[in-house]
Length: 289
Ligand code: ATP
Image 1 (spheres, helix red, strand yellow):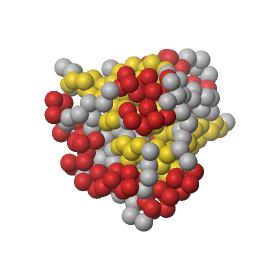
Image 2: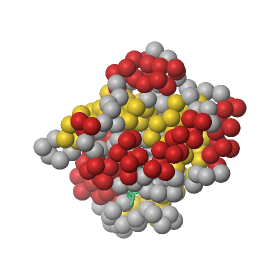
Image 3: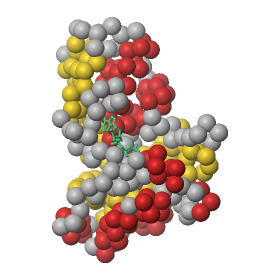
Image 4: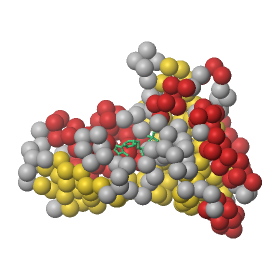
């Protein structure tokens, strides 16, 4: 038996870091929203008691380091599953890009194996298990739009932002989230007003959303990789309504309302940026599978 799952990427419309906790994690407050750019995860039942990862992307590990592998192992151990699974991952989401690709693969694996292995777990339970794999996995279990707090695993769902194009630009470099957090000095950076962003989203106020985008990690990554800031500047010049780095980067996204502007932005960027995608904001909690 085979199951095909969709694992969509996320962007952060607002990302604030409040403090460093005693357990080493950072306390965050951020708005995450899913976008229409997704990996495909195929789950195939195996009689043999093994977890096999098939990925044809050289940047994606095919062993226990893969987050989808960790999701399958967690469910197997916790619920005493004695059969196996082959997980084929077709990457569409750029790797190490600030788009939660690995976390979304893990979340889709949790949702899929819940069905394949007839575990009958609720989404809330899967999100709780997901937090053991990584801080962004809980959000990815649900999708939609949410305020994430704690170390990112506490999820409060909010309404869908006003619809628009998202143009993503990813330079060739990958960024280590751990390095960005290591270089962050919370007292030295500009903090976004996450509550104002929530208000704008709830009021379907597109101009408000554009005004309130903010990411406390931006200046840190810009210092480490100046080319990321250059991409942001270019996107502004090409007429984006708002531009922000997602997560710890290096992907930068632009919000654009009109099709013609979106086209102009894509054409302008293609000359000097490694990967450019124009996608719609999904933002809504709809069935992911
Ligand atoms: P986040 O936004 O949550 O910080 P990211 O988008 O920056 O995540 P990922 O694409 O999830 O980063 O990849 C980070 C690292 O995780 C990669 O370098 C890769 O080695 C490892 N990894 C493990 N599993 C996966 C997976 N299924 N897909 C992609 N990368 C994975």
